[in-house]
Structure formats: structure tokens, C-alpha cells
Length: 488
Image (cartoon, rainbow, N blue to C red; front, top):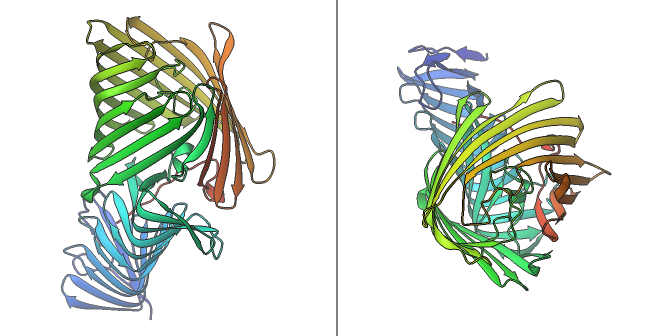
């Protein structure tokens, strides 16, 4: 007869002090066909075992539950399930106090990613998969797979919930159908709410820009043990402006805080998604070399629901081309972000405020006050529109052209819609409210081939054409990559 064992000392319903991650008063429940005790604080369960706590459930044929140490060992048809994760294997060990564990072997899904691995290790901030194969394709067999010696799926905590943020893989290869196409460098792709460009596979994409002419761009990434230190190398070989390159060494301090040392040669600071997402207007046709630059990023941190803050400090010597200006810059920036908050059934409202103070080696100082108000609406499935009113006020003077305010008032718009099945169009525009003219326009056309996105984009300000291949999100996630879940 199927029983529910209650433990409060000797009960199966366990309510007690929880780990730091779960907070006080976490509740655990255990169901099984048969339950016994190997010690006063140790329960042995067998037959259709189910253990649940918070938003996580564990299923198995057999389970050993150490109440005092808050440790779990499960075997036989093991499955661990949360809102955006479902993994199955032969055996599972968990330490709920330390939020660590291991499953051997493991198959299943983490957010948009289907995977199989010889072993998965679980940590508070990541899942590490060894000898793994991964894909976003739910066909059998999948259209493509990424085979890797080790892959790390990083997790982020927001408002008490845990969500998959991004994937990092090393010693990887791309397989299409049943054929191995090519080896891949260490790379990172987004699994969450990061810019769509970060979902691109690390391939040398051919592109064209009015200033660069034809060019090839490439990115290489490497991480070290304990995943605290990472190195990004980016370069672009252009016909008209030579070779541009950048090296970025980042050390994670904890959470989303990091320390970064950057050195670059002729970096185009406009190589980022079109839109008012920062203080700079990104319109100056200049290149900047960091020789080098050190930065500290703290946050974002949640002050309360819907309200976040972050601060950044940078110091370094910068050289601008073709102006020839070269001097030290010390800058401090504080940002406050609100929402998006629901203002109706389909309407959301968000905003941001920021201030940056900069001091330069030749004695000048400058400040920029930034504000943004954004209204966004979902018109229909996979269709949305957003309008952002942006204001920038500057004070003082700067020797550099790239951090001058070139557009004090602007209206930025974005409209995305599917003109046909598997197709998606995104239109972007930045309208200068003072000069009453458009300063930049962009078009992005994406074709979804089941589990891969093929994208072609154009930006008017730079005369830029770009092509990329990226991982497609699941159908249920399209239009919103947000999600939440819990891990041990």
C-alpha cells in the first residue's frame, strides 16, 4: 500500500531549517510504496518514490534520505524535475545544504537545450556536463548536435528563483545529421534574456560594412577551473580598416559581479545591438584602442520586485582613431532600472536612469545624465512593438568623440512580426527629436529551420550587412525567453 511518510524528527513531511539558498522553513515531502529506517534520522524508501521540496521533484525506484545532513541518494529510473529542467539517469546524489550533486548518466532538457551526458555535476551557480551531446532540436534524430568534452550551463538567481542564463562549451564539434562538420572553439551562447546575437554559433561569418568593406569576424573563448576566470578574444579582418582585435580577461567575484581587464586595437564601440540600451549614442564613426582598461561591474541587484541597480567603474588609457586623441579616462557609472511592469493585458512599461562621471588625463571632466521610458505591447503571437523615449543631458567637456552626446532626445522604435510561417522580421528606428530626422534604421530577417535560426541584418548608419546562424528557442518560449525554476 502506497504510504506518505511524515518526518518531524521521525516524520516523512519534513519542515525544518533550510539552506541559505532556500531560506527558512523549507518543506520536504516523501512518498513511496515502502518506507523503513536505517537510523533514527535516515529514511529508506522504495517503489515509486517521490521526493518534493519547493519547486523541485525527484522520482526514483529507491531513495535514501539523511534528514540530519540533508543528503539524498537515489537509484533506478531517477528523474529530477523543475519548471525549466528535466533530467533522467541511473543514479543521483544531492547535498541540499551545499546545493551540490551528481547524476550518472544524464539525459533530458534544460530550458531550450536537449542533452545527454556521461555525468552531470550540480553546483549553486551552474550545471557541468561531461562527454555531452546537446541540441535545441526535438526531432529524432536531431538535425544537428554539438558534441563537447565539457559544457557548463550557468544559472542566475532573480527574485528568489533560478533560471538558466547561458551555456559555455569547450573542445566541441558541430555535427549535422550524422556527420561531423567541424571543430568549434570554446564558445558561449545565451539561454536566457541576453541579446539575441549571443545565441549565434561561433563561426567565422562573412559580412559587409560601408566603412570596413568586406570582412570576417570571429570570437574565441576559454574558461579556467572553478569557472572564475575567462578569456575572450575577438578579431575582425577588414578590407578597408585593417585588422581589429580585442582581448578581454574577466574574473567573476560572485553572482553577476566581475572584474575585467581589456586590451583592444581599433575597436568599433558600435558593434552592439541597435537601440537605446546605454548612455552613449553609438553614432560616432571612430575606432578606439584600450591600452589597456580595467573595469569593475557590480550588479545588477534587486532592490525590490521590478527595481534593479548596478554600478560600474573603469580606468584606462584610450586612443581614438582617426582623431588621434590619446589620454587616460576614469569613469564611474550608476544605473537604476525599473520593470518591465504590466500596465494592462498586453501593455508593459519600463524605464532606466543613469549618470556617468568621467575624468580625463589632460584635466577635463564630463558628466552625462540618461533617462529612458519604454512602452511595449504584444500585438499577437510572435508580434510585438516597443517605443522608447530617451533623453541625455551632458555637462563639462570630453576630448573623445565617442562619448559625446550626439543625440540629446530620441524616439527609438522596434516592431517585430512573422510575415509567414518560420519567418520573422524585426524593424528598428532611432529618430532624432531635435533634428527631426531618422539617425539610424535597421532590418533583421530571420528564418527558423526547426531548431536553427538563419539571420540576415542591415543597419543604415553603418551600411552594415551581417549574417549569422543561431540556436532557436522552443516554440513555447518564442517571443519571451524568460523563465524560472529551482535547483537543489
